[in-house]
Amino acid sequence: FGSGNFDVGYKLCDLVCKHAQQEPSDAIPILISKSVALGREDKQTDSLTTSITAAQSIGIYPKSGMIWKIMKEMVWLKFYFQRHTDDELLSLPFITDSKILLSMKLLNLIIYRGIATDHVTEWLMATVKMIRATIKHGICKHTSMAFSFLSAMM
Image (cartoon, rainbow, N blue to C red; front, side, top):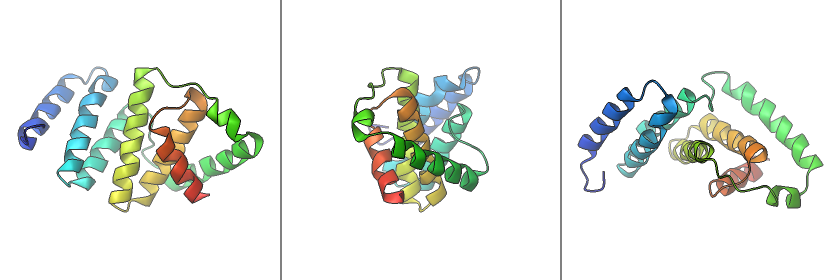
């Protein structure tokens, strides 16, 4: 992708992902690279689709029932934040697990591409998923994006 050979890069990504079908998480770094490249080529919708498909393949993003799941998560988060302080959130550990970090990066891409393509339910879902993952696993460099959008939503 670096030298502008996007078509060759996409074919290579597809080939590698095809051979990584035994373990879907093996293909995630490749799909993230493909999604980023599609975004740089201003193919935001294709980038969003690639990111969502990757997130669904590893079970971190739902395939249906988005609105109800977002509403349920928002209610849970509202009650969570009423019972916890900012200091408690800031004292969460840093995420060191590489699979969780890749998941967070993938959700972050969904937020970016969802906003760029006006797919509100997509970026809302990715935001609440990232916040939940942060509460469960800790913080990382992608966490700030999710908290910024969560504060705007609430």
